[in-house]
Image (cartoon, rainbow, N blue to C red; front, side, top):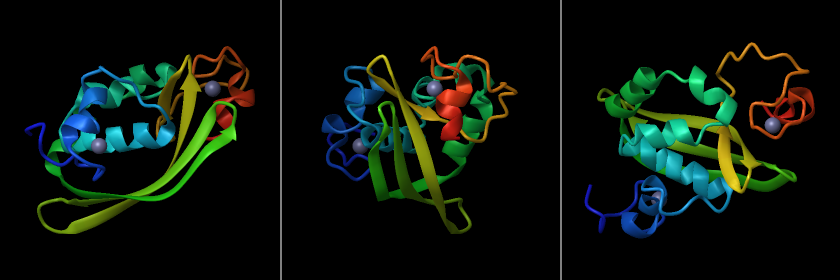
Length: 156
Ligand SMILES: [Zn+2]
Ligand SMILES: [Zn+2]
């Protein structure tokens, strides 16, 4: 994709939208921006970005090949933002969205309510699909130093 083209997330030219985030020149200012940039990363197969913006303690459990395959095997049509709640508490936010994509045979809509966590001024996605086998008393996956139960467990 050329920088002057529209960003897959639908928020303007790629060069002024998600590209600086993908290139690590900027980091997402809020959970909504992170969500958009993760959608664009799926559309443009920026797999490292998907991995690196998942909660720190979850990154090792991600299946890179599966993510790459999912990214590549679909055509990403449109992102539709439904709801954004910037402050569930001091460090957690919610973004509800619909990702429209085409799998080569037919169009689909992936509807998701995602949770995000702020850690040392960076936002991360909390992946609810990973089986972390973490107990409630262990330190949280986000790196906050709190017990999991008192931190991100409430949101995933
Ligand atoms: Zn964008
Ligand atoms: Zn946490």
